[in-house]
Amino acid sequence: MIIVLKPNVPKEQITLFKTTLEENYNLTVNTWIGVESTVLGLIGDTTSIDEDWISAQDVVESVKRVQEPYKKANRKFHPDNTVIEFPSGVKIGDGSLCIMAGPCSVENEEQINYVAQRVKKAGAAFLRGGAFKPRTSPYSFQGLRAEGLDLLKGARKATGLPIVTEIMRVSHIDMFESVDIIQVGARNMQNFELLKELGKIDKPILLKRGLANTIEEWIMSAEYIMAGGNNKVILCERGIRTYETATRNTLDLSAVPVIKKLSHLPVIVDPSHATGKASLVEPMALAAVAAGADGLMIEVHNDPKHALSDGAQSLTPDKFDEVARKVFALKKAYDGIMSDE
Ligand code: PEP
Ligand code: MN
Image (cartoon, rainbow, N blue to C red; front, top):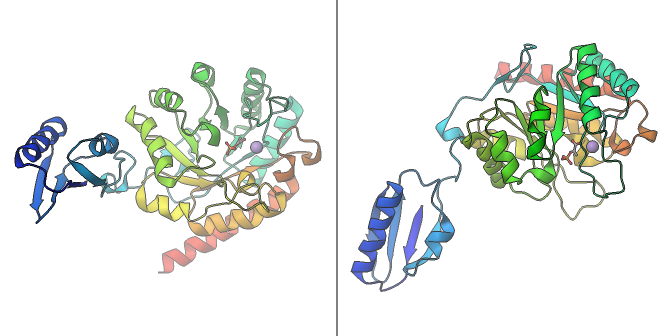
């Protein structure tokens, strides 16, 4: 961290400020004295320093962070990829491609069991399905809630597919005890109290990117979970808000290689919520694989036209068969090209 001091700050004040920094944060402070202003260089772990506090000091002109504000999620401090292993033998982050698929919302037993069996057959490793739904309108279907969780567990029992489903409040954590991956949706990416509590449990967390959040803010949310001791975080790019209206969101595929550089955490892509259109899921799923994603989350519905949520972006099971076939074929070709290099 570099701090530029105001011109002509008396020497005693500089010394006092330096000592405060060194004593409070256990840092080394280097000083460069110019003709008019003085620059301080902070050496050491600056992650816990509050930039706003620095800026608010009378002697400070400006402050610039030169190192990322996150540590546990940072590849610099953890060069190897995080690989999350499941009892089924499935791994996420090991270079394989993991597909999570299923309906936006769990609607009834017949629906979830049918979709589960179809996505499993097509090669999905996880069944997704919302039980608690974060809907824009309070008058829209809000999910089957606890009953939805039971139906997901039933579908898991019938097919053997582990389940991933969204949590919306801290008080539900116990209810999610036997869920295999707990999803934090885009709208809760910065629900810090929820993130802190999820940091205390030993369960993989799928953290979706917020609708209007930067990559750094997204990694900082992962850091919240990891700071509590839970290192099993999977990031999910699901599109961000831009001025474009042709798609529901704008899929920021460059986030995949950017995350891979900055962090060791696995990153998957959700082309369904990113585009909002079933016809765009296949091309964007293929592009995500080419961008290096560790997996995909895809919405699949037995009868998209009558879905209780997100029908327009949901694939039929037949279309999902085709998309899965293509993405696995592309992944195989991609791995072949990479190993030849
Ligand atoms: C979902 O996966 O069903 C969902 C609501 O996604 P997002 O949080 O990305 O909007
Ligand atoms: Mn959805």
